[in-house]
Image (tube, rainbow, N blue to C red; front, side, top):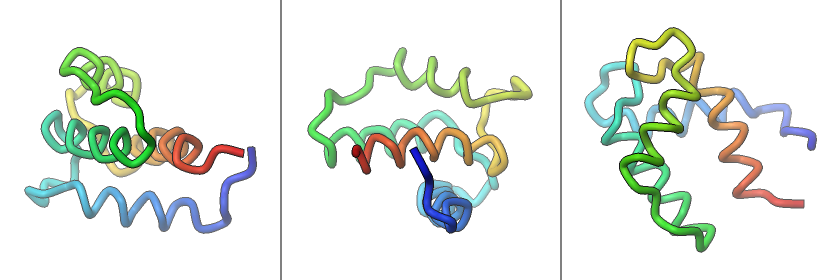
Length: 86
C-alpha cells in the first residue's frame, strides 16, 4: 500500500490532536482515546486496556513507556491503513 506524500504531516496533526497534555508524547490515556476514536469510526471493537498496552509496547521503540512523535509515525501508518482500506 502506498501512503500519501503528506503522511508525516497527517501523523503530526493526529499526534498534536491527541497529545492533550502537551508533553510531546502520547501516553496511555491519550493512546486509548485515539484507538477508541479509530475503532468507533471503523466499526471495530473498542480496545481494552491490555490491547492499548500491547500496541503501546509495539510502538514504544526505546521502552520509555510513552510514544514520541518519531515513534508515532509508524503507528500512524497502521492507523491510516485501517481507516483507508483498499
